Image 1: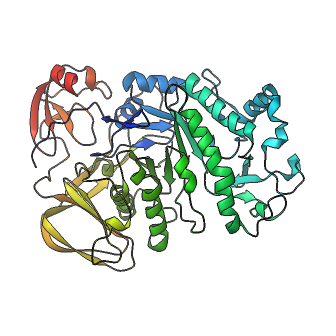
Image 2: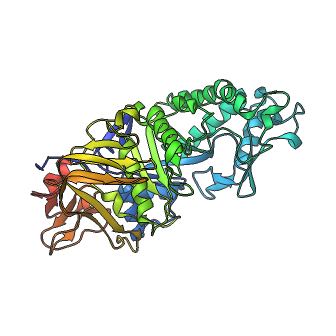
Length: 497
């Protein structure tokens, strides 16, 4: 494949979402991590700054240290969607960073008596509005929060104003609001809307009311406030897998994007009718609308088949604001699938049906300039006729990063093939055009001098540049890029990329 001039710094070729600069995922797989607890100054910390597009729920000291290395590093704070966390949260720009979130709400209510008494901020499962009749949310048998009344003007004002205050004081780029699904699973009582004052005939019947009267006006208020502060703070929610058939996730129309937690893997591969629901809704609400998607999955590290399923679905559904993450704890890990390179996607997804391969019932295709991705969520094998020569991409290894060094891993284009291929039930095929296929690994006798998900720089003198410092390094580099080489002085590279 012809070498294309492409200039960018680390991971980031910036795109805009509502006037906000975001890492571009058009021709790469940017990784947006959950909370990582590496210490500033450590090799792993520098690795994170160079390799990740951003992360959530870290304190100001870490935010500042990351941005000294990578000024474009995106960080969002954590907040529950429908209540105040009964545990601690990051509320302060100075130590102690973590404080009781309820104390913050109670103080705000005291300063703003015009919105009413504290108890009026909560929903109750009977007409008796006291603390004994609040609706509780549990996770792992722990009461996490009480369900707030999203219609309450004081609650809306508190969430919008307090989270923006934290953004401004601590340096967050926005907020990740957790547990945004319809409030039934994990709630006590689960059928809280069946009795007065709601009097719904069932939870299912209450779904449209929840969207129209509670969720959509609430998220619309928060997002409008976020976008009226002289800069656009990001309002990102956790939409989970979106496989509740009777509930439409229309509230996503009122936010900037969402994390799909358990992305096609929670409790095993998501296939069949649940896959159809999840995939169609991801496209409908997020990737066809130019919104943010954070695809976070949790496959077993040694289950390459499940890992292929996750990354294949990401490549099928992604847009330019789509980020990926394999959740693997609070220490740094890196996986070879992050470095799969198919070049730019040809077009963003429009509908799920538009991706269905003609003449099949369950085979979906996404085209890239350097390859194709095929996903079969059905119960039977499907066949596909290749129109050229392609190499099936495989990968192995990955895991913990030690002292800033990637784990043993590889991404390998296989033997070129053409003609008809078969994609098994619940399987994916990641295929790179044979003319474009080449090794991602460093060349013989060269040492990596920079970090990228789509190419690498190598110092021809053999010296290694410290992680996170390659922009300040002076020397001559060979750039390996899909494949091909280009030699350019560091100063010239710095001025153009």
